[in-house]
Length: 148
Image 1 (spheres, helix red, strand yellow):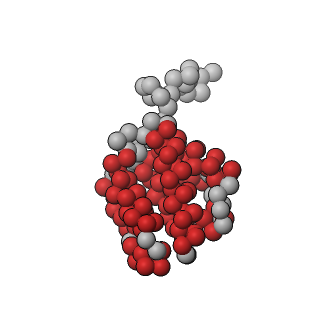
Image 2 (cartoon, one colour; image 1 turned 180 degrees about the vertical axis):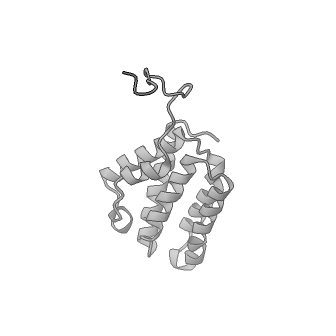
Image 3 (cartoon, one colour; image 1 turned 90 degrees about the vertical axis):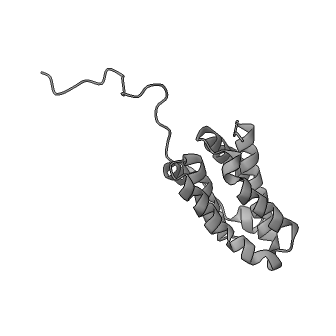
């Protein structure tokens, strides 16, 4: 009895299977706001590696986040209290970058992570921890082949 077409192991895709979307991947990651509020941990480094690899594997280029990262570093060189407004304006910059390339799953994951940890930044210490977290992710992105 034939109940319909058989798959025979062929999914209809040429080459690699489609990659997991950023929202699904993000939901599997275990973010801990203590990494921003308190300090880095081994788990944060594992998270950063996983996120950075996903971003590299999903076409996030350095040029797409260069201006955002540059602004993060510029703020870091000053005092958070004096640069608070600039920090708050990073959120729309990240949204704008994704709006220009809304199909880019690597950039989408970056925005999801950024938005999640953004709310945990309240002072100089938490901003420094935020910078370390973002730098760790971007370092792994580059290590796993993130392109310019």
